[in-house]
Amino acid sequence: MNFNWATMVPILTKALGETFQMIGIALAFTIVFGLLVGVLLVSTDEGGVYEAPLGSRRLGVVIHAVLGFIVNIGRSLPFIILMVVLIPFTRLIIGTFIGPTAAAVPLTIAAIPFFARLVEIALREVDTGLVEAARSMGARRGTIIWKVLLAEARPSIVLALSTSVISLLNYSAIAGTIGAGGIGDIAIRYGYQRYDNAYLFTTIVILIVIVQVVQLIASAVARKLSRR
Image 1 (cartoon, helix red, strand yellow):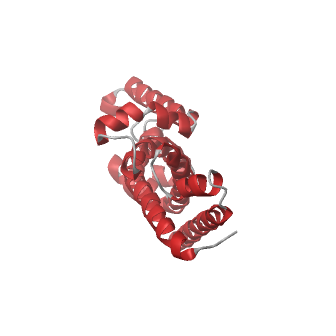
Image 2 (cartoon, helix red, strand yellow):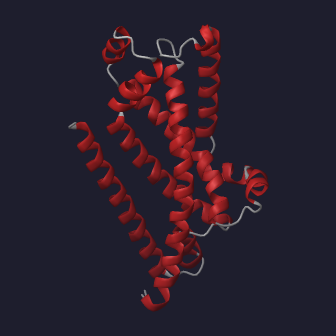
Image 3 (cartoon, rainbow, N blue to C red):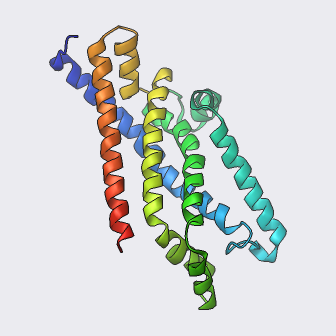
């Protein structure tokens, strides 16, 4: 292996920037919509604070079933298939399906159902006694969601977010196969196709370091939130 750092560093730096760009865009939308879908899945379920929206239990059942079905579909498709299927949609809203910004579209659509299900699990772990206590004190439904469910589930949601970030990192490597760039693209083009093990092993080390840092930060934040 020939580690020619003078050549490798600019290439790897550019690839890292592309990886962070596509993950950053996808993560922003994933947090907003994944959190919303996760809250709706819990609150429209039986016993949830919105189990009967507009006074209709049937409407609550329908919303919960439709959301659950969509989330399951999103989690069923392998990312590389989802990415190919979404090429027309990506081209429609971005103007191209090549590049890190375009790759953020399938990354977002893949990550939202994954994060939403993790948020749902985190919210269901909250002690129902706290919700009942808030109800008995006359708390509004929005207050229960914001100050009881989400407040109590914050440590679990932070850990869920770290899991989602790591999944996005894995997906971004696959996105390199359709011209999204990124660190995974370098591993494939230089490491695999050109048989340059220096690039291959360097990108592996970089990915491992990123995952370790993300997990360490998330664990520290979750511990801090748990002590409050």
